[in-house]
Picture (cartoon, rainbow, N blue to C red):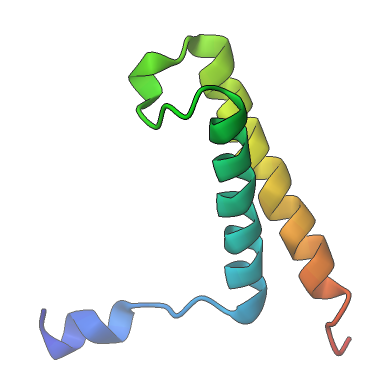
Length: 72
C-alpha cells in the first residue's frame, strides 16, 4: 500500500463503530437462533433477507443508542 492509498482510508467514527458492533451482535444472535449456519447459501431467500434485516435493525439500534450520548 502506498502512502497515497493510505491517505484515502477513512477512519470510522465512534457512532459508526457502535452501530456496526450492534449490527454484528444482532446478526450473531440471528444466526444462533436459526441453526448456527454462517454460510448464506444454507439459507433460502427469505432467511437471507431476514439476516440482513437483523443487521440493519441492529445497526439502527446501535446508532440510536450511540446518539443518546452525542454532545449535540
